[in-house]
Length: 635
Image (cartoon, rainbow, N blue to C red; front, side):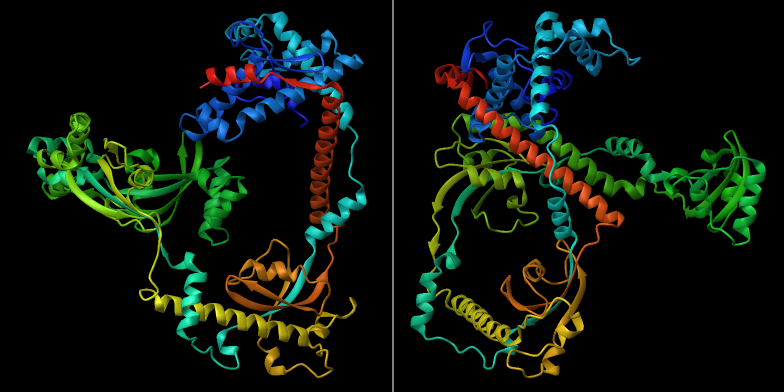
């Protein structure tokens, strides 16, 4: 909210990527300035709206990695959001005009001079860069400076409305204490074994009624019967012929994988002087300090001194000394062109020597797949033309390397490796293909291609009771067990809950008597698990988050509540509440952060109310025909 007023400059700097409250009238929509609406006497032009749409679509397309068109933008409500921004800006401009707010030339000059887009490499304002940027945007200096002046006036008004708005300290403290409060709790899970008697099996009528009442659980998903063609480089590789020269060329291109000299994994620490290097080496040899600690003493991180895998030649003057080690250790000081250095050898990597004859088979597989991918890419247009000419998938399979297959596909089925359904591209196409769609070539992420045809859609169907009787029985048992556990938990809660005064310690809460006055059962108490010092955003291992959330909803220590979480039933007892100490560093930091967040929220709300009042008083008129015309031309 605080920065929207300067959005003209920000907009220019970011290549017209973001539309804020200001920055309007920079390019031309149709060479004119057709109004799409008014706020009082301030116009909203087609140029402003068109530019805002284009910038937003461009930004969204870059973020999504694909073109976002006007249709998608309308589905997401982007045009309405742009119009709302324009109306907000126009309302501020109208109010600034009415009460006579403006800024002087000095402020305009400063804003332009501060814009990074207009600076030379030296960091100072560049007159030539300023002129060039405005020329590319189709602006004169007078136009741009007028817009900057309007934007600065808007910002001045906005600051006057929201400046000085602060959240009461009592509210900040209360919120911070709520966030930082910790609690001790005890919990106990109730399982089927705790029921006084096992769940009895229902009669057939009950099961059939359960089957109908919970039809969504026993309904087969939509099935799409598909016929497809496909081929992948791996499928085509056995048919690719490769000569010895081609394999030898691949071997030579990847020689580093097959021929490598002996190497060492090495770290190097440059020391400030020879004396410091000798002292460091002496301390390491004496066991007083490890090499890593010496690195940290020099103000460096371990990654800063790690050289990686090094050959003898790459180590230069230190090569012989490092390679003389037959196990990890430190050598040096060695005088290098950077100064005296200590070297730590971390590991020995044996030389790699895989002759061509030994690598031939793996090379052939790799080269064949690569060659097959190129063949598929070359012939994909040919296959596309065959389909476009009206040939069926079956006919294309008879005369090409593409293989024909059929599948009954559902969106819920797990992708299987080696199956065409394991490819995300195929699954997306299978879900979208319609009965009237013609097959065409699609590409897979491994260089393969496919085409598919929708033969039939079998709609979601309730499975016959006879086929799923065992599933229905298991589902009923689980639901009935859960219901009985909740009932038992509620009974125990009523017996166990006791509201203790805040001054009673947690130990007293744990040993609390029931409302009947009888002492708690020690055997039952052993089943409770205690957790201490838990925060609202904490977690308890192997427990659903609902347990902790329930504990923070209990009003007083000693009380017990039931937590129904993910088909599991828990009793949760609050043992103690520990208030936050805002005098500590953490408490102060959280309070400051809370204060800033609440201030921003109050300022945003106040600004929203103010802007709505301006619009109501000035009156907002929109020209829907002009808006539709812009929407039609922006794609």
